[in-house]
Length: 81
Image 1 (cartoon, rainbow, N blue to C red):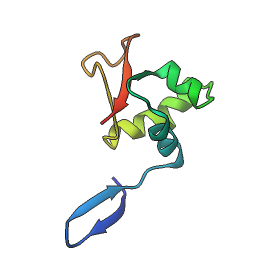
Image 2: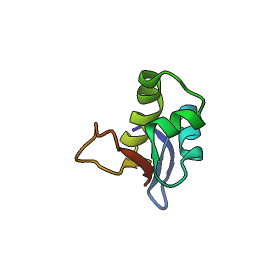
Image 3: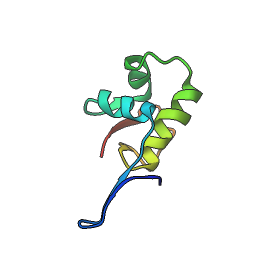
């Protein structure tokens, strides 16, 4: 995790996120599928979406899967943590 801000007094750490992840976080409304997210973001390349948006947001614990035990489920959705 890259540190964006570290406050010595409160020991609070904020992860630095890419502009793509920021865009993703701002558009999530409740639980949304990968297809819905890509549509709202006007993206067509699923591989690019996964690598630049989805995986970094998940690894920084900003969003989570609704079915973490079935990551490849066709009914998988994502929501803010």
